[in-house]
Image 1: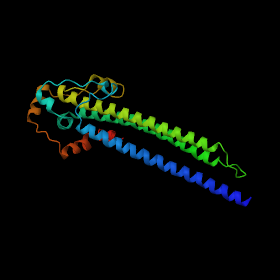
Image 2: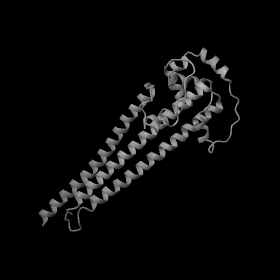
Image 3: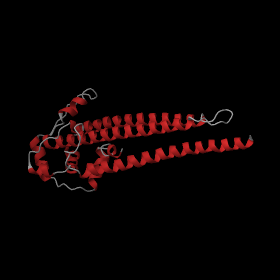
Image 4: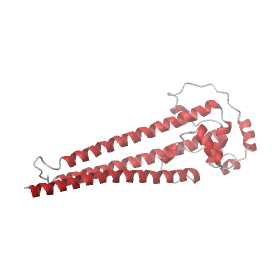
Length: 245
């Protein structure tokens, strides 16, 4: 009897080790996937100009058309630098409010993912603990139950990874179009102001005329250098962060 008890104890320890290894595997794979996805999105954000390959839901807010050849040549980084340097404080506050709104959307989705995965981890732990009876007998169906739990965790991780990717793409495209609309037309897209109408107090703001903005544009010397990062940090603390999730 002692011999069989020792065997069962070793088997139980194996299941516990498997559960621990599985937890580490999920954490490492999740971190690896999100890191690779974030790097890819940042590269696309900085270097891609063509959004035709984006799915329809990404193009929820259509890009505005260019009026001049100089606007056609400008990249998002150049437009962003111009906006940060010349936009009124009131409008900068609206941009920051949009960034906070997007951050809240992403944070809510990540919290939901973490809650679901934590719930499944607890189920796995309970399944491991319940795999041996009080008299140290192994339950034959415990292995199948653990396999089903593992499959559910993989499905949950895959589902939320896709949701995060979709939300990130939509937020990125919306933000680019908002900056582009401010640069080219000196106004927010209609969708941007209407979506925040319930969250914002109406702000009366003096705005520079289109001619004055055009005059500033002709004098601006655009270049993608360290100042781009400075403006991201000072005025747009979240606009780059969302692309690394």
